[in-house]
Structure formats: structure tokens, C-alpha cells
Length: 314
Image 1 (cartoon, rainbow, N blue to C red):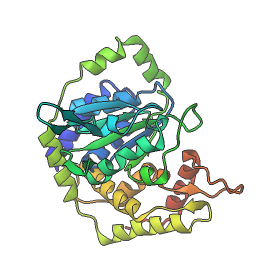
Image 2 (tube, rainbow, N blue to C red):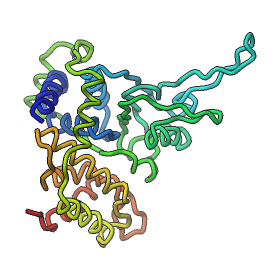
Image 3 (tube, one colour):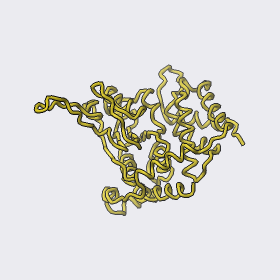
């Protein structure tokens, strides 16, 4: 556990050398990586969403691909396409950018639902099927997607089925005045990103993921998670509660957080601290107007209220 915690601390400090003033966001991204989960970052342009994905990938020396989602991008631009070879008389599959360890799906909600759905099989089953042929994706595999707020021009909301496949939905937020001053006085931010070094490698990531799976969680904490999930389904303020997958993912993330803090066992705080980023995008608030519009600010308040009222196991 000590060696794992030291490895995580090296990774944190390395990313913090570029992403200034966002330790909590960096920690959540690392937890998603260790827990084998996908990460959705929703925020306005220019706050460092893509930079965080780049720094995470290059700090652990992962194969990195970036896909810029636009309204005319096709599923084949993501998964790849079969091309006919006239000399050999056969088709050869050219792999798309999805075949990487860390895939940055930049501005994912600017593409059509058809293109968004091209990620579903890869995210859920770590494989891609093209022309009735299935191709396995290499471990580790994580999708870091960014999206602009739904109110932005040209944005297409992700459907519930795809949102449910993301382990966490987080927001970068604007930097504090002191941190923004550092950004303004340092050298070019893009230069800093290019200079970031790897402090871990792919084998280290796989080892951390194996250790996280072995972290113990007591039955009383399993009941705690179950009570939270049940409360979301029974809440009069929610039209849609958390799915069974959401409960499994919350437990998975809690194990990874315990490892990040150097423990081989979970505590209630692991679950409570991750409830908002793991659960908020999986629920839909009840509306008096019957529109059921999802708003993270609304769901955050509801989830926070549920956690505050929930009895914490001791």
C-alpha cells in the first residue's frame, strides 16, 4: 500500500506542475484510471479539460489518441474502416483512434447520436466490432470525454445509456485568482504540456488496477452503498434513480480511492466523497413542468441532501 501511495503521489505532483490549483480534479482523474473507469469532464471551453487528459496519459506513458468530435464526424472515423486491397483481393482493417490506452473524446456532445454510440461497445466491453469481426482493445483502456454545457450552441445531449458508462462526471471550474496569476506569469502553457515527463509506465498502471481490485470492502459498507442507491430511486425529487451499474461503479471507485490514500480497505468517507462525481450524472431531477431536464447543479444538491440524511456506518 505504501508503494502504491507513493506512486500516486508522484503522478499527482507531475500533473500539478501543469494543471495548477486543481488537486481534487486531478485526484478524481487518477481514481478513474486506477478503477478502470471512464471520465466525463463538463465545463466551458478554455479551463484545461483537454490538458488534463493529455497530462494524465503522458505522465504514465500511455498510448494517447485525441478525437475532435464535430457534427460531421462518422463512426468509422473513430473505430476504423476496412479498405479493399486490389493486389491481394482482400479487405484490410485500418484501426481507428479508439485503439489506444487513453482516448480523448474532445467535445463529444458536438457530434450526432449515431457517432456518439460508436463508443458504447468500446467503453462497456473493451472491444470493437467491424464487419462482423471483433477486435479486443488493449489494457489499460480509458475514455476521457469533454463536453460543453448543454446550453452551448450546437451541443447534443448524451443519452442516459451513454452517460451511465462514465464512471465520473466532473467539472474543472475557473482557477482561483492566485492560481490564474501563475498561469499568466509562467511561460507558454502549451510548452509546459509538451515538456511533461512520464513518472510511471503502463505496467505500473496495471499493477495499481490489480491492487485496487483487491481492496477490501466490509458488508456494512456494501449496505451503505445499497441504501444510497435505493434512496435515489425513492426520492420524490428524482424522476430517475441510480441504476445497478451505478452501485457497482461507486464501489469500484471507492476501492480505488482507498488505494490512493494508502489503504487496503474502504471507509465510509471513500463512498461519501465520491457520491457526487459518480452518481450525479446518473439521475434525472423531477420537474414540475414535466420536462425532466438534467442539470448537474440540481442533482448535486439532491445527492448531497441524500448523503447528509444517510446514517454513516461506524
